[in-house]
Amino acid sequence: MATSTTGSTLLQPLSNAVRLPVDQVNFVVCQLFALLAAIWFRTYLHSSKTSPFIRHVVATLLGLYLALFCFGWYALHFVIQSGISYYIMIIIGVENMHNPMMIITQKITSLAFEIHDGMFRKNEDLTPSQRCLAVRRMPSLLEYLSYNCNFMGILAGPLCSYKDYITFIEGRSYQLQQSEANGKEDTKYEQTDPSPNIAVAQKLLICGLSLLFHMTITKTLPVEYNIDDSFRATASWPVRFFYLYVSLMAARPKYYFAWTLADAINNAAGFGFRGYDKNGVTHWDLISNLRIQQIEFSTSFKMFLDNWNIQTALWLKRVCYERATFSPTIQTFILSAIWHGVYPGYYLTFLTGVLMTLAARAIRNNIRHYFVESPAVKLCYDIITWMATQLAISYTVVPFVLLSVKPSFTFYSSCYFCLHIASILVLLIFPLKRTQKGSKKHESVQPVWSKKLEEENLLQKNSYSTTNNSFSQKQEITCRYQALKQ
Image (cartoon, rainbow, N blue to C red):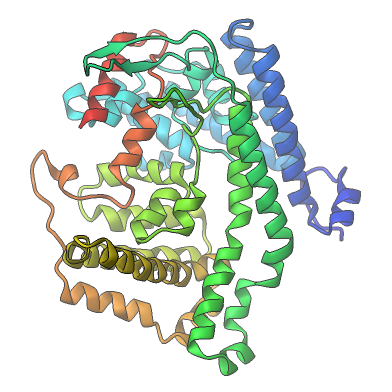
């Protein structure tokens, strides 16, 4: 099954054998190669044996090679995009890096805001997370290219902060902050590197199961069948809604596979360690992109979003939600749609998501407290909200899969726009809690992506400092610990 691709066709025979497009085969094979390269990178180019310069060079060259293999001459986009952005930082000045023209990719915009926060804003004006992520010196060109184009994340991410990446490259990832049993704060440092082998093995097992599910079940439950004329004409409403749920559930394993494999590659290289829990168990989810169990059993729209594409959610929160001057939820959803691409289905999904999010928030704020006193009543409430959440999520993301306007409106019109209308009615009936003004603005309104998730990702992990950073290591640790306690 030969297909057109700008990347290498070396694996075309394998593509024909497994009956998958060659670009998908290239992606999977390159990610598996990256996994082996990550193990080699951690073993033979460990920070205790190799300088950060060599680690940056190898990570960058391997990353560009994988991009070239997968995308051919399209890989020039990585170099050109990074090069132009770096040129702007050097020539025009980093004080202009927060300009909307720089919103091109997650890493570039994240670093732009982190530099802006660290070099051009007063420390007292920053939130705890912004203070901890602020970059207070200009990256070198090699550091910048390594951050953007390293082999561990060039194909599938996930996003990480610049400081976390530099800390990993320089070998300072395993310095821990701990608290003594008597509650007195104490800073301690662990010198031995915890092994990621168990975490990598677990994630590879998830990858295998997700791939198996995708290769078997997913193909038998196409999302497009939801708009099939005969199905819509003959199936009852319960059957249609049940198929809507199972078809969208079956569409998720390909994301589970890609994101979990990307996470495993970073872990195999030694990147992604978040710290130890109180029992001394290691956590390798610093840059994880999803929590499958919480996704499949989410009982609210917010809970689903908190655990799906986590790093993108945090990026949207950091660069848009926290900085928006009005309607942060709407602005964030619009930015998310623009970032995803130009397909109309993306915009339909995210505009529908705005309605669903606001309606779900209104219901939760106004009625949930009536159902949490009795365990039995709360269980019934959780079951009902799980069913409603899964249906709402499936209804919302159909255009995201169908992409085009006509099939998307065919689906919504066949459902009589029922959940759109229901969401509007909910917003007319139930009041939304107003945002308090002043310094507690962001504390009084829970964003789409919870603060707890942000704090866990930022603060329950290893402390660090950047080379030539004006903050000392001890100040960084204190910053993170104090923010975690808030």
